Length: 81
Image (cartoon, rainbow, N blue to C red; front, top):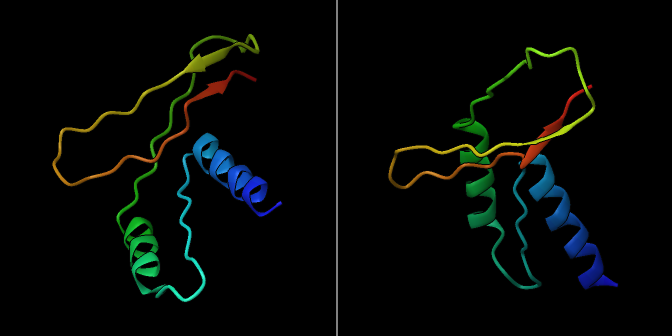
């Protein structure tokens, strides 16, 4: 049950462009808290509006950066309304 729940959280984070961290029993939560704080502090939001009228089609996206020691957390795509 626990593994299933953790898998669901990982899947949700991946689909939404989020971050999933695990802190086990007896582990220091400070490193995870610092990573979350850094992700929140250094985040950017990019937007895109499709030129078409909305077909309901799924579009795959990939966000790339040219910067060392950086991470990208992004959705894998979007569906036109």
